[in-house]
Length: 485
Image (cartoon, rainbow, N blue to C red):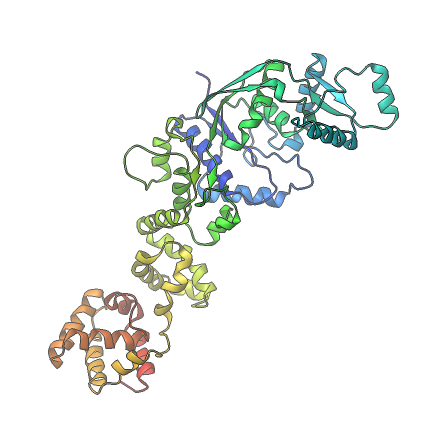
């Protein structure tokens, strides 16, 4: 059986897009499931837009998601190099072969001539395509064009009257007719190969067995299939997964929310949460379970459960999935990941975070049940660092009653009993205060909350108070009441 080898081949023209991340994930899962190779190569032939900065962003985003590769950029391998701009010699050999067999030819048409051709075809209500006027140039005609200083492109000679059949692993049998495809450029006038040509050469020389990519590439597949035939190469198996749409069923764009992995990382989504969500965009497991680790996804993923219908990017679903992973995540790691957001909110400095690691971890254990993304700590953690101004008239009235100072002093006495402060100890202090002063729960619980936090809602007090400590609780009470206790 042919070894399973898949690849992800992004263009480094910007940050890693959500759609690209899903393609990378599907290829990665399939390769790992079948003990195959996963390759990352860079399609950087768009010289004007490609940058090493974007390449670094893409690599960093993949690694953050947990998608590593065993061959390709930064890893090496026997079929490199893994950047297209470093593979021009390889493309040149394939071009020579196509030229020798008559499957490709030089085209000297100028941009103005091509534009005039398209306009004439539109006027006749025809689909614009190259009309083949340079298909059969004589050597003398080529010499004349070269004398004029024209730089040719190389076009592929599309066979006439041919049905091109693609047995897609997701979409089934798809048939294209060659007569609807004009002779297309495979090498530009500057010697740089076009996408459809370079990808064929790369996939063949890198022994790619399966290509899993977005549905938008389906229209490229007949062009690539014809190149495989002309070069007498075996094509890989193709699987075209559905588009990702916004909730309004239009193609996903920035108006539907962030479109890059970097944006979601900065917003405090966990990599495992985003991976879990991306896996469910177009693929569905058996059963009702929706929360999976990467190892579980590798075990369960296969192409026979990839849907043909478009996937809908539902931000609420992403937040729910991420929430589940926050609840299940390692508390120490979550705390460390939350620190930048706490620093950004001005609650503490990075140095203070190092010194208060245990207290921050205790705080995270309390508030993570209310987090959908780590940036939510900026709201959820506020009461752990300072109380809010006592502005609510109802709250002010509640702590201005005559019995409040004595009740708070009694509560503090039961808190500060020499034992380690725990949630259970706080509950006990509430009960003992009520019993000693013959008060009802509502006469104790809410005034204590207001005196400590300045507001009438928030974290459970038996969870908040052990994190604050008795001294901080006393300081806040005295500050909010304006008197010593």
